[in-house]
Each structure stands twice: as structure tokens, then as C-alpha cells.
Image (tube, rainbow, N blue to C red; front, side, top):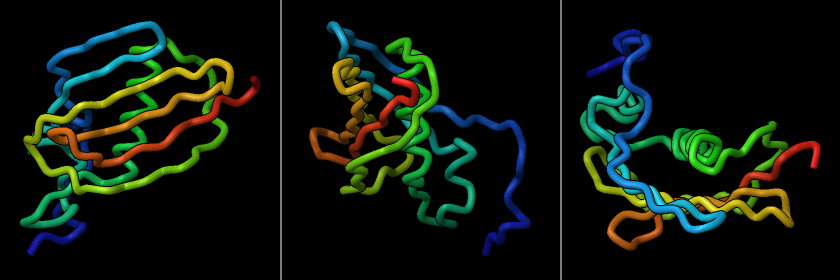
Length: 126
């Protein structure tokens, strides 16, 4: 059985592979894969890896900054929901939408059309 002391704390791969990108106005849709060798799968859970929810939220925030050009700190999150486990090697779709009038970014991860997780981030200093 793997213990926390067995987990390699290093600079291993931490981000998904981006397969495609489609952008229309303030919306970007990314097709991505969470490869089995990602650091975040180590120890979560041994023998049955699942992408942690906190990683999904982190990826949404990072990718929103990268693909939507969002700058500044996120002040709070809302309506965070986790509906389906994300397993290694699954083709996922991430939809990010900049809602300027609300000063927030909404995100939605799906797997073959099924909701995995969703929510939004509100920017500080709006």
C-alpha cells in the first residue's frame, strides 16, 4: 500500500494536455486529457486514481488566466459543484466564460457531455 511518504514531491507534470482550443468572444472551450502520470494522481487514491476537486478548480483558474487573459486575483468562488469523478486518460471539455459585467469567470468540466464540475471565480478589485 502506498503511503504519503511514498509520494514523490517534485516538479513532475501538473497540467493536462490541451488537445484543442475554440474561442468565441468571451468564451473558450478546451479539449484536454488528464494523463495518468500527472503528479496530482499520486496517492489520490492508490489503485483507483481520481483527479482531486481542488485541482479542477486550480486548472480552471490557471487556464482562464492563460486563455482568456484574465489578470488580477480571484477574491472568491461560488456555486462549486462536483458531479462526476474525473479519471486518468479521459478526454475532457473545459468551458470557460468571462462574464465582464459580473467580474467573474465561470467554468464547467464535462466528460462525454456529462457534467463533472462547475462553478465561478469573482475577481478582486473590480
